[in-house]
Length: 324
Length: 284
Image 1 (cartoon, chains in turn cyan, yellow):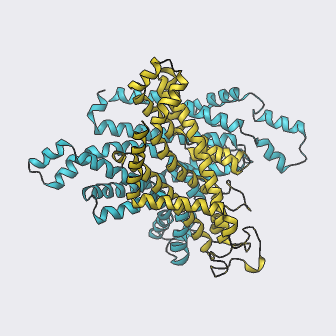
Image 2 (spheres, chains in turn cyan, brown):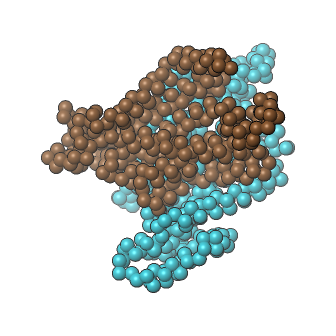
Image 3 (cartoon, one colour):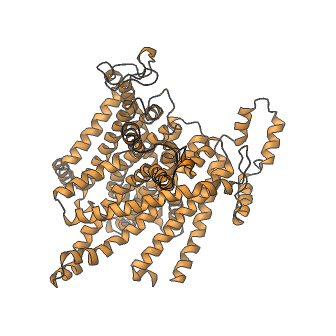
């Protein structure tokens, strides 16, 4: 198991380098330099001053050399300083934004699992029933509804019309003055809509996969054997079939991490949540190269970590894999 | 040979026509085409005509979807918005499909080192939070419709590449390929004339489904304000105005979103219908 893990980790290194190299080149070769924005802000800037600025930020060197410098720093976990006016280290900026994004994403992943697996299993065991048809329609709608639109609708319904839930930020303005219980509810109520909406996008796909996996597994011989020896149907489904049907789900969960992280930009912008997605949006608008690279790298690491967790989950669930 | 193709085609139509969901998907997609092409005749008002006397009017007979913060007719803007999503969907998916077919074919046909390099590249592209990358690139370039289509296309070819590669791996050892090679056909000819036509059906399905995805990405970008720029109407940028006026004008949020929903639903139903009609075993 340990060697398996080690091998997986080793395989990830070239992928990570590839991702950062690709991102670095795309971002540095795209037109529009950070110094252009500064020049826009201060039209009186002389060409010499611009050159000095570019030199100061190291933008005058060839891109590949810049990447080398960047990479050498990253190995020491130094993401450089932000180009923005406050010149704070990128890592500090990311560090204060990361927890809320990870919290929302992991809670929505849990929510996806808790809802999608039972839906998938039960619509497979009741194939072609009214319930199955209903969930199929739900799944199609789930694929087609743009989640940021659903976000707007739910904000109108729960936030504006009913007034049950707050529609922006992660805590109320009068948060400090609240009692302990109200503080907890204040936090929770701010997170309900974002978490539910992040989960909604993944829900349809996963329950569909779960259904088709289950249908596949139920047709296999060992299930017939289990039924033939007189096991109760619930045991056949939940002990024998479910285990095998869950295997591909693990991979899909691992693959869904980049989508979830990407989705954070939209949700954090809609709900004004001070997370990584919002930080990235600001970084992009101001062409803050170190910040953009820092967040893309962290995003890639999170994705690879998701894949690694999926591999570990797979190895735990299926002994054939760890011995290979 | 001709007979066989005829039979397959009529079998396809027969299966497709029986599937009510697939047919309704086809009707939706066809209607969207008509709406986009004949937008000037369908839209009751000029989509960009500002009218300060009719700001933020709720839906009424003259403005069935209401008016926006500049008094423009939302119904006409939604009608014209269909042009954007149609163009972006088709061009972006076209780009992705061409790249995917090319890389997938090379990878599957030659295998070996070329295959490892290309598939590694696919893995890398799949591990980048693509939406972040699209966001960064579009914000750097001028946010024009052309740039949006190119960037979405360049970041969504990986699925097609994998599909085509898998098809090529299973097809390249078949007799008809060996026969073509024996007759002295060039690699290019074998790839594009002999193998590719046999590998196209899953590509077609994934392209139709891909259009739905591209429509969603474009609307999300426009919603964030870095996609199609006002005053050009796009469903995403109408929704942005909807968000800014969320407490007073629900109609600005509801109707453009419904348009996106119907469009994406239509392409998804059509795509799944084509898949089921080509090969019922592929059904999920």
